[in-house]
Image (cartoon, rainbow, N blue to C red; front, side):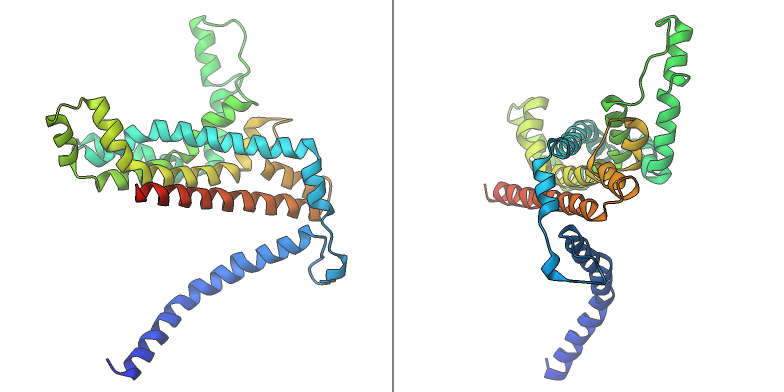
Length: 286
């Protein structure tokens, strides 16, 4: 290969990567830098670095209310991710292994939340769980209850609706990984005397961990960054980090502290991603 052809190849790679690089820099890197500067009290457009302060971070770390908000956000992300993984694995396995005609129907139902969107799903759950909604109407008509139940505005409503919204993001990576697992491995385990449960625990589940981990990460980040659904279904007093950021901007008019909360949320996401990468790297070496 001549030097000119090598130079042309490098130029072609640069040209192909240029649009994506511009999008990343303009859409992610620069806003993140502005956000970080604002969290230290540096106003964009002025950029007087001598006025930088860490008081907003000290406020975050020293205020039990905001530490509780961070804890609630992490708790919701973990609970929804675990529940979604448990519920999505059978569906992903079925879609990857089954040759039934019902597979297409299950696939359509799985993609429905993604196609409808979080806002419409949230409104749907508000109608279903409301005091005059479907569930209360059914229970009242059957005589199971005398007064409508308070199903909205709490952890239960938010968790159920979030699992519904992010279900697709867990099914897809699990299905993709299960498709790559050779079915003969399961047959070999059964021939050697392993039952269905032992085959699943010792063969299918370990080989499916990359898909579960990828789905867990996607779902966790989606839940931690959700705003509309927790705001409408959680009710008053149900505050997560996105809601706290919105309150600081629209109610308290404290953009610097809102930026601090945003940076903290970004750092949490980065830490979770790094932990997942390290765990999966160690698993692959075993």
